[in-house]
Amino acid sequence: MNRIAQFLPAIILCTSLLFILLAFTSFTKEKIKVACVGDSITYGARLEDPDSHSYPAQLQTLLGEDYAVENFGVGGCTLIRKGTPTVWNELPKIKATNPDIIIISLGTNDTCGYGTCGDRKCWEYKDEFESDYRDLVDELSKLSSKPQIYLCAPSPMVLETPGLDRERIAGLTIRKPRLQELIGMTKSVAAEKNVHFIDLNAPLDHRPELFTESDGVHPNKEGYKAIAELVFRKLGNEITY
Image 1: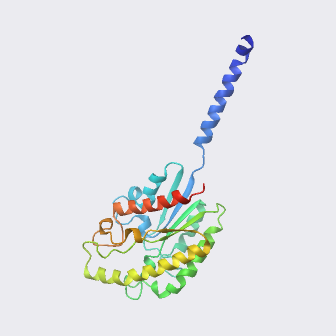
Image 2: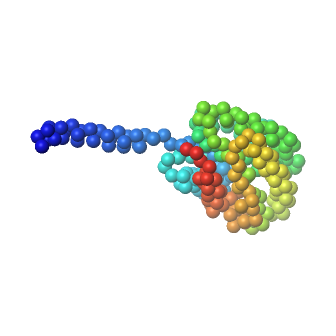
Image 3: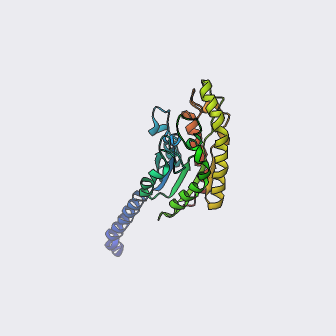
C-alpha cells in the first residue's frame, strides 16, 4: 500500500497530462476545407441573408464542425475564360485556401449570348467551354492538398415559375437547351478527368416552388436547401477522409 501511495501523485499527474493532450489534439484538429466555386446561385442571390441560407451556408450546417465551407460564388461568373466576370479571375483566392474538397457549379451564365442577357457574349464562345473546363480541373488538381473535385450540373431554369414575364420566358426558352448542352460537356469532362459529378439539374427541374418568383433561375431559400442536401448526400457517399 505504501508503494502505491508513493507513486499515486505521479500516476494522477500522468493521467491528467494525457487528458489534457487528448483535449488539445481534439481542439486543434484541422478542419476539412470545402470550397464552393460558382456564380450567383452559389453566392446565394435573391436571398435576404446569403450568409445563413445560401447553399454553402446550409451545407456547412449539414456537414458540421469538422468542416469549414467557404463560399466563392460570384454573381455573373462564367467558366469560359472570355466571359466577364470569369472564374479564372477568382483562382488566386481559391488556391490560397488550399481546399481539400472543391465543388464547382458553373455554366448558367455561359448560356448568355446572341441577344440573350443584354449585350453579354458567352455563347459565342461555347466551343471553348469544354477545353476551358479541362484546364480548370487540371489547374486545381495541382494544389498540394490534392483536392477531391466535384463538377456540378447547374440547377435548372424553371419556366413554370410564377410571375415570369414574356421577355423572361423567351430568354429562358432559348437558354435552357443551351444549359443542357453544357451539362453534357460537364459530364464528359468529369468522366475524362476522373472527378466526381453532382446532378443539381434534373432533381430540381419542373419544381417552381423551389425558385424565386418572377425569376425562374435563382432558387428561393427552400431551393438552396435542396441544393445543399443534394451536395451533402453526394459528399457523404464519396468522401474518403
